[in-house]
Image 1: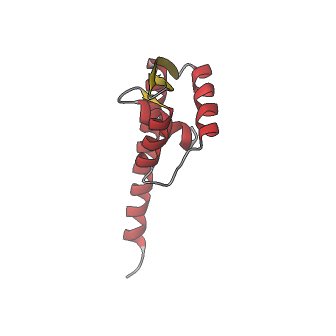
Image 2: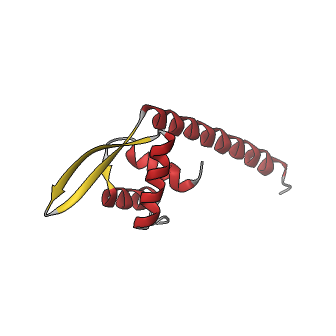
Image 3: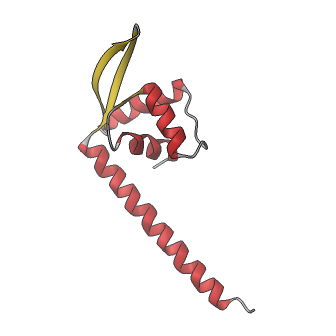
Length: 107
């Protein structure tokens, strides 16, 4: 799973969000490293909807502007959980190997 996908699914894991809120949430989650552009965001959301991982969950008009909300589907939640488990496993293996390295490096 690519990082932007992982970040978008994570941003939707706790509640539905509209486009601008997703851009800001991804930026916050990534500590400012990832700043999605509007075109990139909506292309990614369309792809995630086609995969069945994200769905449109509502619309509203705020100050004359149309907002569409997106939500994580059960399938998207399962994909994110699988990715989180994969990353934990990778991090554990990296920690294990680093610990072995520090023990085998001569002082």
